[in-house]
Length: 542
Image (cartoon, rainbow, N blue to C red; front, side):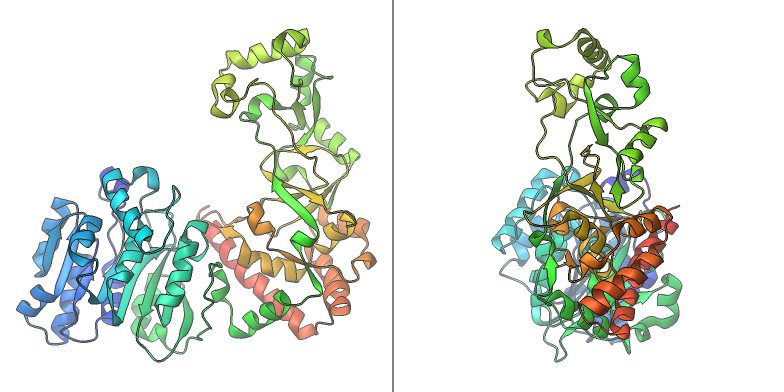
């Protein structure tokens, strides 16, 4: 999957390794008369594999020419594809689909590797057609939609009732919000789904994890299975045999993330029982969560002690936490904050007040003029404010939540009553809820395991949560009043999460919920499996 030059990268065109094309073609094409569509044929890797597969099944050259259609926008690539004896049409796929496929033609097989192009680089002429077609079929594309998604959706819509699709798709399909509709659609459109994944990156020149999506319509067995291989060498060595003896799971016809399908049926059963357990609290029963403060220019608004003293701003700043690494324990104490000041951390927020320039002190005006000299007032978030130097604040956080977790998510009590930037989320406990108990109970293996199925992980291996995802978390609170927060805080500062979990799991899961030792071990297995997988991807990128 190598880009030949910058042009290929911009158009989202990457060559598919022959072994992948051959694997998919062998799986998808079952008879010499199968009508096959390749919607983005590029230089013809898939067309070559399709031709070979048809020939193996006894198809004549004339039958192949008649039954196999490749679409390619780039004329140079289309010329390369033409050598394999199929019909190659040099045209935009969406235009061709609208004119020749929609409500007119259906295929037995669709295979391919759709381009990966973000919204802003997606040619408007073709994007309008693609989005109009998606809307016609009940989808709601937006500015986050990548081009591979309409390619996939419309390719599915081009299939007959008894048919197969085999596509190279970004692993984003598993978890990004803009693909939520597609996950729900795929789970209902196909009777059986197979996702072949790789622990190591398959395409050396791009940091994009991919999956092989194999969908079947009109088959007896229903469900979804995930085949996890180490790398391409595994695929080559095992071939079609890698699909054998893999456990099928029941398809969840929702928009939920598909990360959970890496788990066994037994593990999924444990999670399902706990997710439906009424004795476990939903996050929304305990607290509100929202993004932290967006300054528009942290280099101006979030400063350290040296800057405060240099501009004499002691009366113009308030405490703030600007990075998750500044939070070591389960509590942010006054002593913690003073230590951060001593270390020179940027933990002061410039807050001159919502007043006109003439009403500011000389020191405040001097600092604002310095910022204007740097051009900070021209930043988008700054220039759209009535007063660029004044950032409005909403409610002060009772606690913080790590937005991008490395090992595991964490809640930190805000005893200092500091502000927080949008590198973290802010939490406000509901009336009658004891925040100390929630922060302590948050650290348990069930919540950790669940978080891995709710958050999103990309190439860097971190687990990212938006407020809406945090709201889906669940926390076992029964017997939380038996937890010793100070003891847990000390363990957290020492990085002894194993001690914390042994302690909280016994009180919350074993004693509070009555889970067996075996069930708790399964939760550990879930957490270790899913967190280990994303951390391996982090190590690949270092």
